[in-house]
Length: 134
Image 1 (cartoon, rainbow, N blue to C red):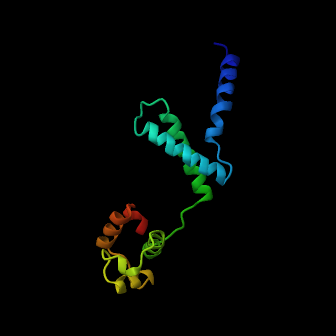
Image 2 (cartoon, rainbow, N blue to C red; image 1 turned 180 degrees about the vertical axis):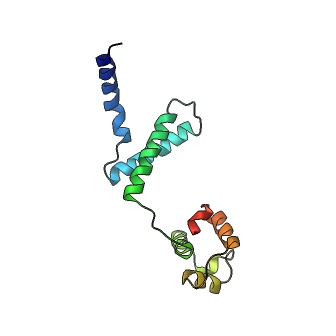
């Protein structure tokens, strides 16, 4: 097959596929997230599925966009706990896995650090990696 024939064929295909992989703004980001969820529903973890590489590539593109436009703030244990409490609409007294309301208050005011037991419990409760609290 001649190189120009390959280039022409690739060009025609690429004009159809490339919009799926371009994120230029927040609307494009939201659309890409919707597409990723749809692909996840269809493909799942089946690496032999014909759309698996598209799922993988779209995930990589989304990650790059998020790193640039939605960076995670550098937060320590208490700051991350405060964030998760706000996201889940929790009060200090609704975290018995940490201890009393006073203990939670001390952690949030940086008078105490989270210990390993507390980090494990919070990681399980919020379904996050323990590393988010370090």
